[in-house]
Length: 179
Image (cartoon, rainbow, N blue to C red; front, side):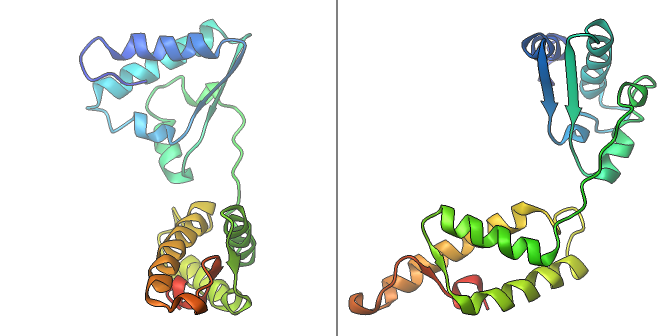
């Protein structure tokens, strides 16, 4: 939505609006459009978006997504912005137990198996992350996906060092997760 040069932003934003007419314009991490009052490109995109939403209010749905705190600031960027989004839905973070289930699902979708001995350490890891880690990433599925991706790489490295007869290329062990 934001251009690199003066005059490029409004046409890019208008193009996105036109493409979404009759449907939905979904803007993930919408707060990244607004970097403060000195961000003329971001403000131009927001102003164009607000105008487009008003002009096409009967055939355009706009959904913004992002972290709550950043979105609150974003909604102050234009005096008409907040009123264009009367419905705000906040999704609670996943629990540590739900993150373990998500991890198991991701593991299976990648064609791997999770050793039963991984579940308790994973639960403890997710609980610790929710208490001590970055609140913007705790409790979301990306944390589980990243943990699985790290484990898959560690599994590959472990299997290279393992005698061929003892290899299980599809089994993720606690050590693959760093436990």
